Picture: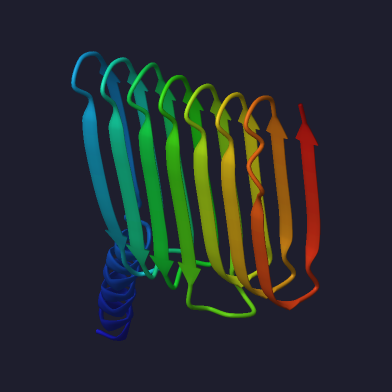
Length: 203
């Protein structure tokens, strides 16, 4: 009877552990690929119980619009948008209690408009990495980060070139590079400690 009771207890513990493992490992992974003509995508992910949010959007021609929103208590938020041809509007919003936020937007011609907002609530534990690359023509990029351990990078290659980086917290790194044409005055604002700024403009 004692052995049977121990076996039943062990089985019950294994059942609870298996269910807890399932709850704590329910990651959200989404991939979208669109080729012509109107091209519009919206992804909204809310993770719970320390899971992972992962989203990728690839758009080739024509009108192109992509938005990714990630929130919740995820341990990691990864978002990427790749756009080629004409309309080019990409936006990534990451928030909640995610420990690591990574956002990448790459746009190749023509209108080029990109926005990244990373708002981590776990100050002292969060890490934000944002990168925007734009190749012709419109070139308008904005990065806004709140938390600690920020890294923001904007690279614009022709033509109209407008870039802005705003960082709130500590351990900030901002890099902005503009090559060709308008070279509008870049805006970089850092509120906190440990800030590093690098700006390169090549006519």
